[in-house]
Length: 594
Image 1: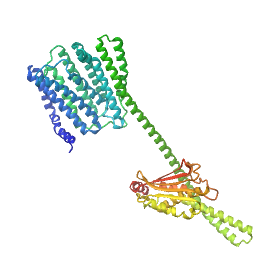
Image 2: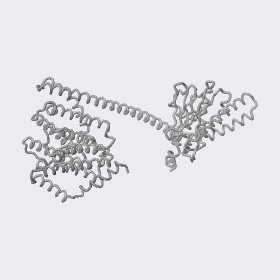
Image 3: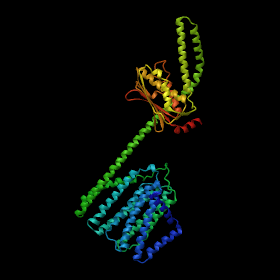
Image 4: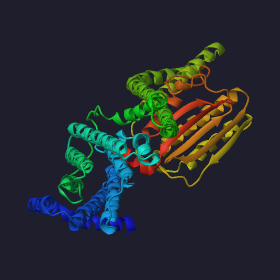
């Protein structure tokens, strides 16, 4: 078991102990905390309780959030950001513990932990902006990360612009404390508002998580303002009644983390309309960028404080503008890449749709024509046999040259018509056939060997690249052999018409498909998109019926394959046939039989 998994297992073993207290146990714990904070006398023991108990509570809460991040993959980033926020909160609390408990001193003013306390709200905002209740496909991880970065930079800029000058550049405790309290209140109110917004528009169990976080943030905001007011009146002390709401908010956040372990936090259904607030984070990021010039103009024309503070604010504004500008560039770069990817997907979808439409039209043509010619061919065949027989008898008993020639021509046309009827019957009988495992390369080589006589003496060069050992396919040997003969014969005839050329046949394996390519250097196809149409041919009358490639198309479709024809840029045509390997086609073949 890895260290991370071991840690997660340890957390899973210990964290539920808080959830198993039950309602009476929780009531007793809350009453005990309230009693201690409200009625225990002020002194060192109460300070130890307030600081140490709060620090431990935050550590446990951060651990529970981290454990959720390790175990809930779909909401990992959400819980991780909450854990980061609680950890920063715990660091601030440890600063109080270190100074007040260990060193036994008063908290200095200004206190460096105030910066960490101010920033710890930002991961909470970013976690909510991730919308973990939405399906993963609705979220853009990199864009969400950039929005979080811009949000973090903007809040840090506000702190550096409004609070920091009077805190560290030129100390002015009254101004610094007032500005810090107002800005921190604004930050907490934004978090409360966003949580309330999301909780009110989220369905399912995620609503319960959001509402618990909303209550925790609201209680914390109220308690924080009460503490700041008490500090201003010099009435605050650690562990006292003003810490009651603070500890209650920490405990409520821990309860939200433990509650997530007991309920199913499934994402919203895909068909659920997205919330109108889903674009809030990008809009806030845009508003943050546009606000920077306004801050700069305010410093130039309306800031009457010492030049040291004004120069610092201008420098901070320029630095924030540069950093946010880098974020904007990265965000635009990602958006452009997504747009290009979307355009590519749209183009591919359109091409696939066109290809599918072409195939459907082709199959409809073949199906309709097959039904038509199946009956017509049988009706024609009987009188045709009689015509052929009588023409042969007439030619045998005719002695005159002209009449014999005419009888011979009648016989030739009758035989041509008989071959056409045979092709029609072959074309119409494209039913699923019994299939076995077939070695495509061996079958292609066998088909090419049958053309040796046709190639010889015609200045046709035959090149092969037949890979042996390719995965076998489910197929009918006779049908596939006939299909390969048609394809090679079509290329040989095209090369013969121009006095020769090169024919190259190649087999390969691509993406779990056995691919066969018939490539020639002939004149190419006049209309590649029509070559599989029945009766379409560019051969002279009497040399072809235009059904060979249509029959081949039907054979390939029956084998769950795909065939297409394209003209090559350098000239010539290439027929590409793809067959799924046996493991991919078995289920489709079985479905075709049933």
